[in-house]
Image (cartoon, rainbow, N blue to C red; front, side, top):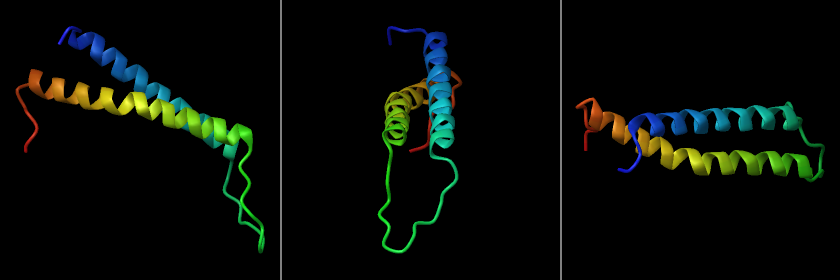
Length: 83
């Protein structure tokens, strides 16, 4: 692996913070769930779509980093994952 564990750890922390912020922003935009009226279709605003997209993009970066980080950390600590 070309990067040091410390660099990988910082990238993992940054990605974790990005996911957390994206979910916080999504909750602020969407707000509390409200019941739909009879026959009323659900409506998603552009701001809500953008917030959902930000969450998806953050997770797309986070998940592979998380897997690489924990695989590397387990290897460094002599505690490989059980198969």
